[in-house]
Length: 463
Ligand SMILES: Cc1ncc(COP(=O)(O)O)c(C=O)c1O
Ligand SMILES: N[C@@H](CCOP(=O)(O)O)C(=O)O
Image 1 (cartoon, rainbow, N blue to C red):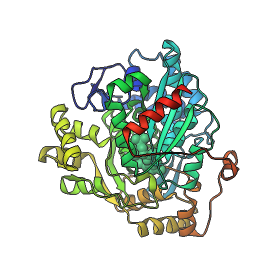
Image 2: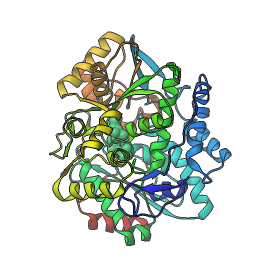
Image 3: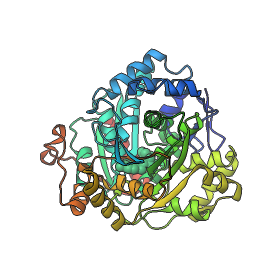
Image 4: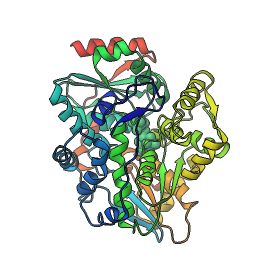
């Protein structure tokens, strides 16, 4: 199993190297040369299996020789041992045909834990083999950062730098990043939006001398390992609703396109996913692109679902690569236009392929609040604002006889202000985080400037 870059000129790599590398050296994202498929019998046999067993069956075909089956199974067991729900990703019913997939029972209360806890384990195995020292730099709108810090804090041979947009994450998210005491953790508040943080991160990766000097590694969903780990819960959810004998639809609160890309991979592996719905907040570039064929960035409008306040949606590049039939030169050209003109036009053929793959919708701020309120009144389920965006858009796509699953991407307690505004209830943090608001914070401000960031990383690494 080899991995190739969406822009076509970076070296082909095995899974472990692609995982440790993050962004390809030509600025593209790694994808597998071919997507392995599972037969209907194999999928049917997943019914009733523990989450960990399904994870091993789904992921192993992507790993080639990089990790043995025993190494993978050990990593999976350790990754999910700390989750607070025995099912790991339980399904709850909201309405006769509408289910919620709760992805917030991991240590940092968001779906990111599914992938981050696992790649934390896989990184440790891979680094122990080589004795390499790495520097992880991540960009976050709140949840990736806390999950990465939780997965990598205190590890020898790893420094973790997380860039978050100053003043644009929730207080719980910020404190999750700024209160860990381990000296290998560095939470950096950047002036700007998430898109600025992600752009600076890519600047660092595209400076090859710097990336080699510090052993740069990435844990955003530019990292294929992140996407792969998220494929698993599409299988567990669909199988428990009757797959492979019955198709299932998914509504996915979307920002950087990693989670819905994982659903795309599940479908390409053979899971009968009838619909994959891109649910966006008022920063609706993806909904506009799928509707009009024009991918045009505008100013980010801060919302009550801040983790999805994104205009430059990194993983859309992988979806474009597949929609353009693997034409890396065409993708490289679009990405050049994005950088120089702030957008691009999707070709008719690719747009048709994207529309076959995805439906889409958006939720305004008022609609998001109304969905939190109405869902609580009807079912007693408290939604975080991101999950509410997914539920609102799902409701517009319900179809007779087709089970719909909305991904609940974060715990409501991470966004208590929005939840309280909608319902009057302020959801408490779970016991392991009960004193979060009293813990001392360590915050470093950093300019929105790649050179400033590089010198900060260099000096902190040598301390
Ligand atoms: C809570 C939450 N929901 C949804 C999303 C969007 O997911 P993705 O970026 O994979 O599209 C994010 C950010 O990634 C998030 O943190
Ligand atoms: N919403 C994300 C943004 C980064 O996404 P990623 O999946 O590419 O890491 C966040 O919470 O940081």
